[in-house]
Image (spheres, helix red, strand yellow):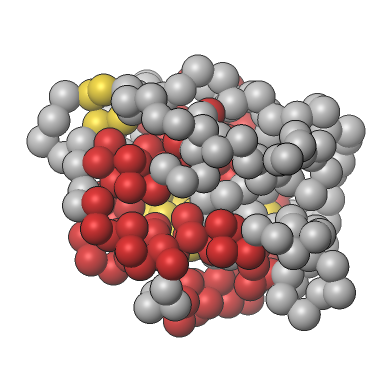
Length: 248
């Protein structure tokens, strides 16, 4: 659960409960996850993190747009499986810490072997990483994913946001909106998505996502700190429209 802090004057009222579905491998989900944390800071919103999987979304397709050559399947599954293990064993607050640390390792550092280090950054046992390479929590991931699709529709990606009876795919935005800019995007997204029959607004995307500076990670009961650098694997998973650097 992402904590709500006191809100600025003019944005009071009861806190809204928002569900935020994400797959940690998606760079735009990573940016949106940091945006929703900003939203919780400037609007009365209580966020519950939920999991979905691009691997599940793309099952049955002739070509997986996230892995057209079929060579990264285990690496695309591992982060969401690790997140599921953390949530099931330690709860929402631990998932919040871990997903933030994992996003830094994956997207800022390119460390696709960095799950254990992300666990340490979040103050969690490194052995939880073993679950990333098993199907132990796949049923929970699939059930959560199915809920997102039931709310937002089949033709979606990640992230998905749901508030009350309004659900939508997105936002796809770069760089991370901060402060009141994040709040205005939240206000507009809810207002637009609540219009019956509304489907889509679209404009050209930037050539690559802009992650900005690394966020500070806070372990349970510890002062805020930045992750300790680790080796990068050179592998980058992007949105289906991204250009991926060579891995070989």
